[in-house]
Image (cartoon, rainbow, N blue to C red; front, side):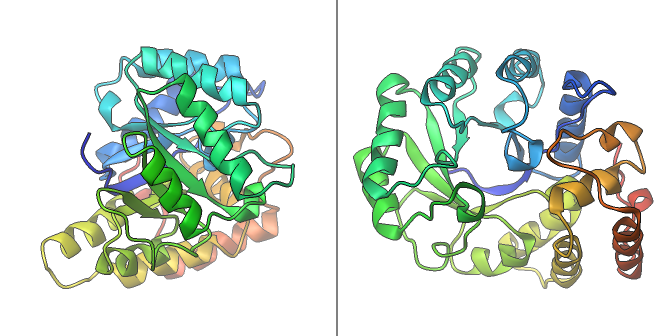
Length: 294
């Protein structure tokens, strides 16, 4: 498998009024952001409420997703607190020919480097035909990958550990591993990352910035002047003033009320925050009606 590179969205999940996963709408949304410019989509990442959606619903969606014309462009977020559930979800996905996985270490418990290496080792012992992107996000799971641990995992499992999403931003500037994808987690780091050899991005806001992010990426690859990066970074910085998942759901709900459905313990932005978000985005000439989102 070639290096995973380019623009990837951490896709939003869409629920019905009973807070059940709306499988058809979730897949349609993921496919729409590929149409807008993403090279691919990570489904069931943290942006997709992955820790709140049931395993059975995930399996139903993955079965349906296997019929997508964009099947090869999907990364399955499979990092769960339960090792057995993580392995089971990966095995089912693999049986449907999904081979790329984004896996964060378990949350809640305190652990160290040796335990993390053992965790990924156990996964690979049980499912060798996989391509794993490590997910470095200390804010959510309580653990921050070091260069040493990533290098050790990549050396131990060169066929399976193929990249990292760095949302803690302690690695993307210095980590150098041959044939290994380094993907930043924010558009504010995209251009800098590309300039120092990173592979691309997996970002929540690519749900709405797909075409902008793709232009920054393509202009870099083709050696063209950057005309979109400043606006792209300002859009991300605006969303970052608020809860990111809540803000994205509020923004997308302007097109489809289904985005107003969100699983507890998450919630939509308060009205005053939503109003401020939209006002700040309007100042950037960025709104739901000029993105081509379907």
